[in-house]
Structure formats: C-alpha cells, structure tokens
Length: 356
Ligand SMILES: Nc1ncnc2c1ncn2[C@@H]1O[C@H](COP(=O)(O)OP(=O)(O)O)[C@@H](O)[C@H]1O
Ligand SMILES: [Mg+2]
Image 1 (cartoon, rainbow, N blue to C red):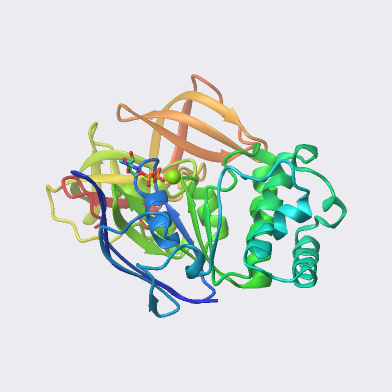
Image 2: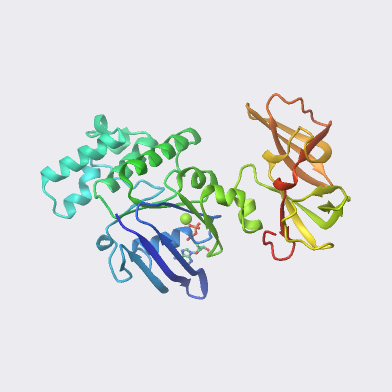
C-alpha cells in the first residue's frame, strides 16, 4: 500500500500538450476516480503513473519515492485495462500466476496467492478453464485476479468495465467496490462514466482538456460544482442550463429567463443586478409540488423508467428535463407545471462559467 503524489505533471506529444501542470495527492488506501470526457488525458495520466508513458515534465511519487526513472515492474503497481489481454492457451490459474512466475516466485507461493485471489473473486471453480470458456465478466475478474495476486502498492484501472453489457457492468462495479473495501489498496480508476466515478470513488477528480476542473467527494461535486463544466458532467440526467439576467422579485434576488419568467435564487449567491448568468436546474429538483418558483411549459417528451419518469418540456424557448414520480399524470402535449426552491437553483457567471 502507498500514497501517490503527482507534482506539476506535464505531457506533450510534440507540439500537442495533453496534460497541463497537474498536481494531485492521493492518500494511502484511497479510491480515486479520474473522470472526464473522451480525449481529456485520463489514460495518458494513468500510463505516466504506471511507467508506460514518458513524463514530459514533473514528478510522480509512489510511497514517498520519486519513480520517474523506474520501470513499471519496479513501481509495484498493477493495472487492469478495458481489454483483458489474457493468454488464450493458459488456464485461469496460469494466467493469474504468470507474473509471479516471471518474478521467480516458488510454485507453492504462486498457488497460495492464486487460490486466495480466486476465493476473493469467486473464481475457484473456474481455475482450470481457458479464457475462451469464460464469459466477459469472468474474464474481467481473471484480469483483476492477475492484478491482485501481485499484492501491488497501487491498483490502476483504465475503463475496465467498458466492454461489458449494462447489467454486468453494474455487477462488476459493486464487486470492485467490495474488493477495495476488503483489500484497501490505493486505487486510481479512470472512467468517462460519471455514475461509475460517483458510485466507486472516495474522491473524484474531474479532468477536462488536460486540466483538473475540480476534485472532491462525489457529494461535494454534486452539491457544489465549481463551474459549468463540472455541473454539466456530474449528475444524471444532466443539469439543465438556461440563460438569464439577475433581477429582483419583491425585494428578493431572482433571475429572469429570456421570456422574463422569474426564478428566485438563494440570498447568498454573489450576483449583481443586471448581470448575465446561466442558471442550472437539476432535473430531480424540478418538483410537481408548488413550493418554489413556478415554471410552466409544454410537454415535449415523456420517458417512463419505472419508479421515475423523465419529462422534456419547453421553458422560455429552451428544452428542459424534469424527473418526476413514475405515477405522476404527465402527458405529451399538455402543459407541465413544476417548481424549484431558491436553494436548489445553481447560478454561474455567463462569461467565466464559474459558480456564483
Ligand atoms: N501516442 C500519442 N501520440 C499523440 N497523441 C496522443 C497519443 N496518445 C494520446 N494522444 C492524444 O492525447 C489526448 C489524450 O488522450 P487519452 O489520454 O487517451 O484520453 P482519454 O483517456 O481521456 O480518452 C488525445 O487528444 C489523444 O489523441
Ligand atoms: Mg482512455
């Protein structure tokens, strides 16, 4: 087990800069998710930590020791990728023990560690099978087993669940979380899927174009996004954004939408009268009860998901999504009446995108 420190990490491929001055401290035993859209530099950053990619500038430390010049093997990390990369001609047990064999461990030690990992991952009955005789989820579990047997200081995951179908992805996600709770090994998990990041991580680091936009616990990022990017990235369905101008209604602070519909905002927002802003409304905060600013629009789309229904409606010329109770009587083409309390309205500066 070990802490991981990134000091002013920079990465360029020729003239193309893909990581810009990233510093990050990861505590021993912590589970960190690096999340961001495709191409933002997640894999590049992870591969630099692993030693698979040269660091253009800056230092990576593992367990307090700078590892820039060390090979991947010397860093004592284990990596799990999207592609399982199992050896087809070897059994599950041989696949899991292969790295230990390369390191010159005795047969006895290898068997003991493989058996232990197999028990943890529910693979005991499959140890004699070949990869071709396994399902996708089982193969991914073998890939994780291969990482666990090495008892590494740090686990690195790069979108390990992307190849699995939706149901299996959710199941494997729970298994990874349960595994971390058992072994408590420092873990860095790369994903573009904010739900995976939210459900798995102690702390989420949101990346965008090679920069850290914000880091915090899943709930901190959900409740207090620092800017429009994080606000739009964390939460599902995504936050609705509407243009508006700061105004007052009956002496209380409010924002007027393009059609001058007023939406009250919390008193502590640092806004000036006349300021151009974007307001953010989370779909799950738009309530059918009338206990805040009333908002009305034409229903454009109704998507039942069971317990809840997603409703797309027209608000001041923009399309807005609300999540309402599955039993609610909402109909295509009918007016939808929802409301939102001032505390639930997010406000961002229109030009900087920063939360106000
Ligand atoms: N070997 C490479 N040479 C040039 N550009 C690269 C190379 N590897 C990655 N990139 C670029 O770096 C950026 C970040 O890539 P990557 O880290 O794979 O993103 P992510 O994992 O977040 O999807 C992308 O613009 C990608 O095209
Ligand atoms: Mg990637």
